[in-house]
Amino acid sequence: MRIVQIIDSLEVGGAEKMAINYANALSNRVDFSGLVATRAEGHLKSQLEDSVSYLFLKKAKTLDFAAAFRLKKYCKTNKVDFLQPHSSSYFIALLVKIIYPKIQIIWHDHNGLSEFISTQKSLVLKVASFFFKGIIVVNFKLKNWAEKELNCKNVVYFPNFTNEVSTVKAETVLKGEVGKRILCLANLRDQKNHFLLLDVAEKLKETQPSWTFHLVGKDFEDGYSKQISELIISKGLQNTVFIYGSKNDVVPIINQTDIAILTSKSEGLPVALIEYGLYKKPVVSTNVGEIPLIIKNGVNGFIVGVNEVDAFGESLSKLIDDEALRTQLGNALHQTVVENHSEEGVMTKYLNWIKGL
Image 1 (cartoon, rainbow, N blue to C red):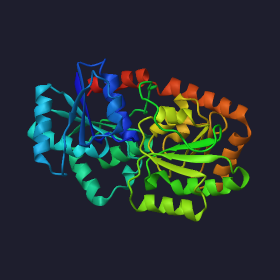
Image 2 (cartoon, rainbow, N blue to C red; image 1 turned 90 degrees about the vertical axis):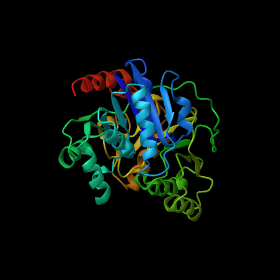
Image 3 (cartoon, rainbow, N blue to C red; image 1 turned 30 degrees about the vertical axis):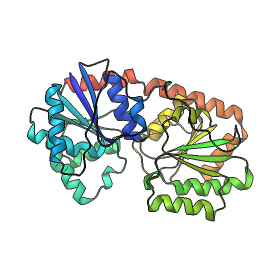
Image 4 (cartoon, rainbow, N blue to C red; image 1 turned 135 degrees about the horizontal axis):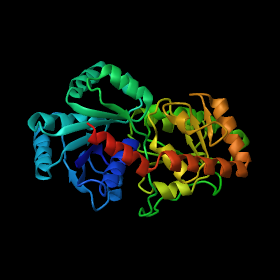
């Protein structure tokens, strides 16, 4: 079996990380594992195993037929059976399918907002789905949506997985007081709802002024990002909330923090949550996507409703006030992740599913 992952960029993000994870995991399980970055490279490129074939396509526009022909040549040369485009990168795979019909497409949908995509994009996706051999989704809401709206009936749910990364050099030194840091690992996008984080930070500052929040994720330097920066100033949080942008040394960053949070208003299954658990961090998260399948409130973390500022702050305060509880919940989440989101378990199900297509 010969499988190639496709992703728009290799900047740090959930879909990007999973493309890397699949390529690496498959490299010692199938005859050929490759990864294609279509538009941009990024920090995650350094995490790609040497055994994975790599191509940077340098795609310049949506209808880039030259890029499609380059990808076709790569597939033909390496006798690729399956293209596995992640999120919006399905379109380049569709172009390749049109000019090289023998290739099979497995679309991997990570987007927790797929059910709300625009009519125009939805129409393009619906047409493209006629050419999909299968669809992988990261939560059951997306599975129901894909089965109802798209034209491919081979839809399967596989949870995200991650493994410990020990080869990335520590470069980032977090600000704030050691032992009093709260991490939010999420790109600066509306879906991630950093406004809730800022509201919580503002309230917490009154009772726990020495605790700080650390936002790690790509800054798109857009209107949303500008609002976040302006609110930090207007709320007087310049010494409480720190923005770092996209970072490659995520594991060393996680290990510098004491509590981890997710404030999203929509999600699939965030890779950040799996990483928090892998490194035994106590978590407070909103109740969205597949997060409730992982976090059981009070057992291995705390989970609250979207935009519930007071409830979120109360849960954080419980962790801040009780170091033993932090350790207990962090260990419990670690056990959940090891048992249900291991590479071995997901890969076994994935390969069996592909063989049956």
